[in-house]
Length: 114
Length: 113
Image (cartoon, rainbow over all chains, first blue to last red; front, side, top):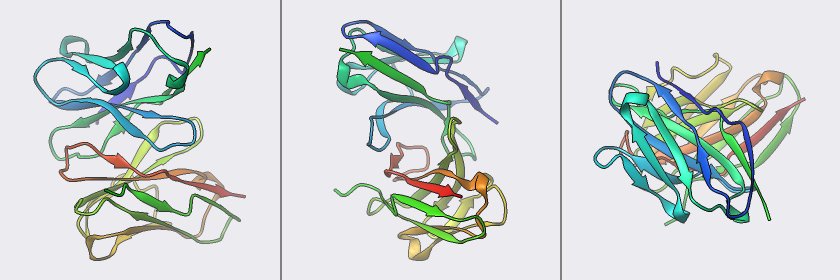
């Protein structure tokens, strides 16, 4: 069974700081990778996804993530955060094969100070 | 296009009572998933429907949980009888294809007292 680790439970940054949230997964086969975000009072929404091809994926709102297969990692980055990026961020994996559900990390709460 | 909707948004019930949660997926999405997040923990898979059939229910905690998807449209998740450890946020998601992007509803926050 696959698992996902998000190493940072709570990150606090000032506006304009750079962001990198770590995500590692354990699964030996082919995976699809996702980052979801949940803004306060809103539902989970997709930030970006990786299925195949260029390992550097660009998403909405200036976010990007890089898939490094050798490290089983899919870290989320943003060069300059804004107050409106305050939210909880979830990394998720969907393994090819019989399992179709998403396996989530425990989430990272990002607080951006104005 | 309407998103995934869930009802109710909040439910507070006493231990031993029954609660039914409803999910309406995006129209045309054959795949419907239920997930749960217990406070402070990760979001965990409960089960997956393809149309009206249960494709995978390996995440269902026990037989107090019963999920149905009538006619391949909306789905219900019944908890009977509810226990304290059932408290959490129950999410529903839908997708067009099994490995594709899943669209999430706002969740139902269930509190069992």
